[in-house]
Image (cartoon, rainbow over all chains, first blue to last red; front, top):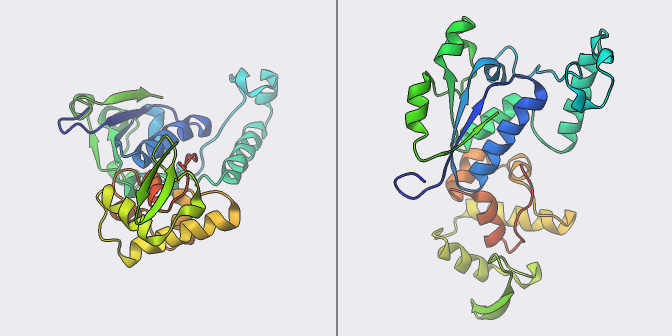
Length: 156
Length: 105
């Protein structure tokens, strides 16, 4: 709980695949719909979710992901990752979930705060301009911890 | 389930406080329910959302998700959160006399 008794949620997004981007976005949006204050922190591969060039081109691969239900070796074949990604995107669309860029915009418009991780940005040689407009700022881990005082934290 | 008198009618509510039967709804009830959650008066923009939600429920059998409201009713996400602050999904459903929302979007 924050000082005024309002529920707070912080979501750390550290993965950049299609199947790991949506959980964070869906949870953030659901929390906002419930009236919970949401802060999102994008670090390491999570930056792909909010980087202009990559956000609408995230991939899902069966390679190294036995949960996808196919023999791992199939994932090596050229085109399999692209196909799996396209199929997953279609299924997501069918459920009326928006593409990543629109989803990020929705979360921003609903009052969610979104931050890039300074360390990860430095590591990947990124500037704030590389990230979408909805990113409020680039901050360090300690600042994020301060913001998350009293918040429930989810790490993805 | 509980019943109470609201806007001159005796109406049933479910355990979560939503109208048990959408057909019991009328505009006066909407205004009372909105006032109870701090939204008063209901402006034309509020009614735009409420009327759309009820019409959509009537035609699809389901209360619309917030995304559907922003896409079809001509109300942006920002506006929706301004009209029904902090938890619009539940607030719209409550005021529009529809059941608790179950969607994730």
